[in-house]
Amino acid sequence: MGLNGPLPQTMFDPKGPVAKMQGELLTMTMWLAVGIFVVVGGILLYILFRFRERPGQGLPKQVHGSHVLEVLWTIVPILILTIVAVPTVRTAFATAEPPTRDVLNVRVVANQWWWAFEYPGEGVVTANELHIPVDKPVSLTLESNDVIHSFWVPKLAGKTDVIPGRVNKMWFQAAEPGEYYGQCAELCGPSHAKMKFRVIAQSPADYENWVKTRKNPVGTAQLSGLAKQGWDTFNQKGCVACHTIDGTAEAKGKVGPNLTGVATRTMIAAGELPNTDENLRKWLANPQAIKPATKMPNLGLSEDEIKSLIAFLRTQK
Ligand code: CUA
Image (cartoon, rainbow, N blue to C red; front, side):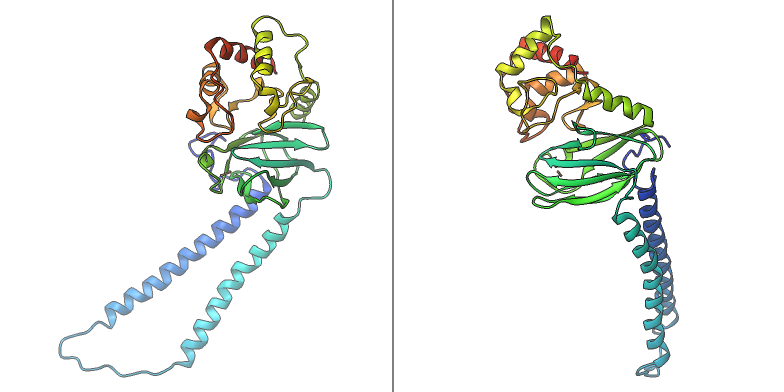
């Protein structure tokens, strides 16, 4: 099955070592539980049938206590729990701390309802689409700007809660290039279900190119025509107060997603809509209609202003 097959967010199709370890633990525990269910249910059914009341039958022999049974139902659960505990503890330790050498560090900041991704080593900031190289451990620190969120990319790793006032850690590694779908997994307000993101795993060369492009932002010096008008609108309407665009002196806001290179993103509005002109138009015209309670205001933009903004955003590659 491809990465974007019918089940893009299944944890039963692990694509990296962390997800694999966690998936194996889950599968083992599940089958063990199924086995216990079948045995217990089978014994219960047998007893119900074998010892049912029959006509003319008096009280059966009364039994009080059985050492054999008591020893058995103490020892068997101990054995079962031991079987579960050993791989659980092993997996917990193996997935708790990222490898110490040759890791990519990323600071994840959760916001209602989008994700900021900062690469301290690279000096790059992006939003909602986390680019990583394949076969390299990615060590994440997770922080929240508002409420409790949960960071989850099912094919790469289990959930980690993102809690205001603390820094949680997790790591994962992608085994093959592709887009891995992620999703906030903790109810965090009206647009919780729309707090999506993608992990875009690339070959090391493609990833290096991406970093290089991000570090040399297009900026706004070369703009002309409609795009130039759009940049003026971006300033006049106050977009600059909430959004950062690297390579500009004006756009330095931190309230909303960093829009550097927004034209190259696959999605807009935190994974909600494909990054097309038509969707961008809908989003700019009425953000709340797409994402209830989003902090992106409805600026009452005219069609011409929207057109110019789209033209401007398309230049940010
Ligand atoms: Cu953030 Cu749900």
